Image (cartoon, rainbow, N blue to C red; front, side, top):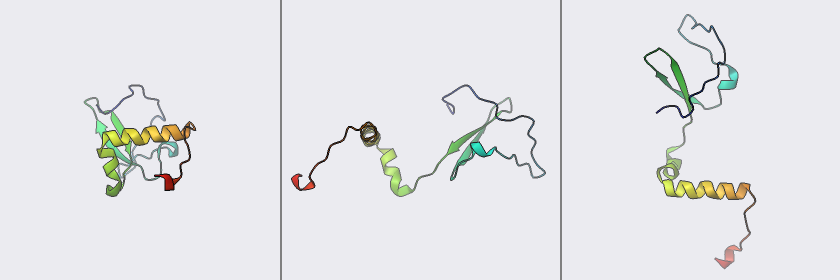
Length: 91
């Protein structure tokens, strides 16, 4: 399944490809370092799925679901102020 949300919002209408078959995306849809996977269905509808890339040296965390869950929990705890100071000498 490509999409998790089934509802789409119309961004613009009657957009035509230019002479080189390019379609310009509105600026609010384009972010820095974003690339797209492109999908189409039997109706000819096109879906652009924005992607970001990460360095291979950082991919290990995403390949370990248990560790990723712990990191996300730690970030959530920090955002909610659930932190405490420790003395590294006590470790």
